[in-house]
Length: 155
Ligand code: CU1
Image (cartoon, rainbow, N blue to C red; front, side, top):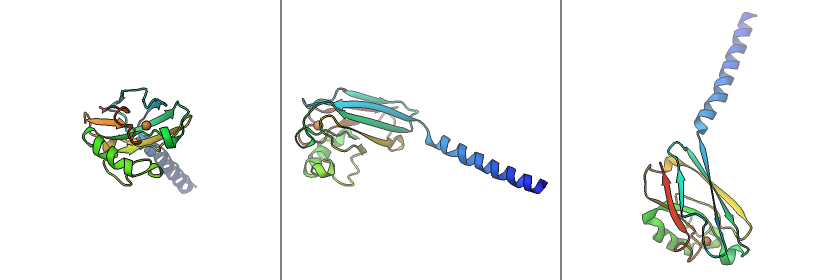
């Protein structure tokens, strides 16, 4: 009987570890919100992520009325030095690819392109970022990045 009890205790112990471990590994998800409008503007010029965030979830809202084909917006994160070449390459990638070249490593994270009244979000791990690095977020819809961009800081 006591063997049985020990075995049950061991199972309970393993079960407890199984529950605890993923919680610690999940870390801290930090949520950010930004919106774009029909005047080709984001409502924020800067987004900050604290050093203890292990994951970032950015929610993008389109507060306008125009469709994605004419005034679509997305949220793309890259190193500041990569913004112009990535946005230029993005123009050729077309709407179906959210104006981001498939597999382009310069895009650290990106959302899909949305139209007026829509909402989307993108999640990524901060392990891909360097604390204090020079990052910029922007919209890669053709012609938008000149106006629709801002500073992204981590740490
Ligand atoms: Cu845009």
